[in-house]
Image 1 (cartoon, one colour):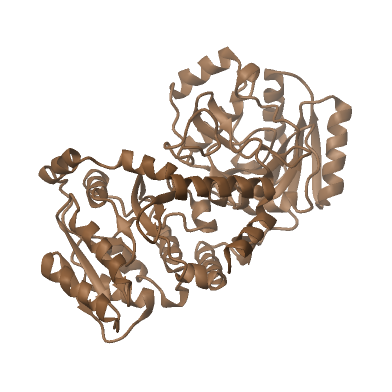
Image 2 (cartoon, rainbow, N blue to C red):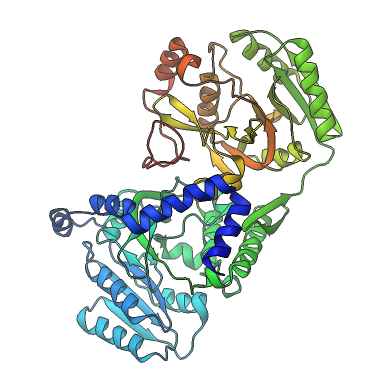
Length: 546
């Protein structure tokens, strides 16, 4: 596919304005090195690396697993050089060659083995594919942890030290880091991927773990390693199977890995095959978790349809307006969604009274699900309720929210990011809904740390009372913190949409109540961390700017 075709296709799915924004960003990164300068500023200094070599963490031997087949010799040499430069010395690099026929590739492998005894080159009789070659290397690994690495990429000189430090301090079963991309020439770093901590729904929608990833060898053996039938999405399938066995998953918010820009890779050449294998991996994962789901590739994303009880009852708790407004909202909801068992409770009252009334209505309800909805919300899409019930039915999910937009299709609520300058801020507020945003997040089902009471769906059996002493929007964040304390999660689904010109649960400016801020800080502390929003982003707005 030509560059012009790719831009045209991107514009059709993301809109003209956002496409131009991304083109500008890409140009600045590639031509002017805007991110590259940031990457180099954050790189460890020679003094830091020297100190790391002198004080290694007690993590034992780490095995770096590298499947090789006819790799570009320059790229392979750059990788082995980046391994040789590691500040953590207790590692072995197992380079499993799947029958390469390219003499230059074989020459680099021989050279690496001679120069550094930590490089173990294994020559296989045939090319078993990326999964088969990786499994052969895993079988020979002697370390307690195995680090997965591609044959043409780069790791930073402190990458294994950072992994070893986490192993020594916490001993998790899986560790992953942030990453970026590097041009084929190796001159520019660009397109950083700053990731959240472990978010199950993000991982189901997309393999955001990717690289650099270290997994305990015992766990790899337990799940059976990689599966060749999922090549192209073999890592995604592996991570889902590992996540079924353990939640001891740790994120390192540092860029330790650089993908090589390679338009000949399978993800570029056979994107549809990769997506289809990813869909199969997700379907099998969810089946093992006891959930029936169908998955398909839609607009280059993994789209899920869970089985739900079509007879489930929903009670809408409509609040915030005069009785006529609440009735109109209820009528529009019933007309647009056509849900069979739908009832409503109209809640009037202001300030603290409304939270008390919502709590009473929730406790008295006999419905399966409760829909909290502010009276001015409207324009729900056809499958509004079904899309939210699909996720709200899970025991680990506390509440599900749609994406709310104004009449110009700009986001007015897409979940809250916590730990911001104003305690919490709406994610991607003002961005066009179809744009997708950071790594296309707003086009995928994903986890957030809090949602607005303006519109969300909750299982009645899992209801947690709102704190009735709050006057304003911080009641939503307090509610989320209590749910998080109970081990529950929040989900945003872009496939459920509604319209609200402005989120009334204001958390900044005139909407902030000083007494609420003081009350929240006293209960939860002055600084709240958000596992769903990287600490590497700016804190003034939740728009993923670094």
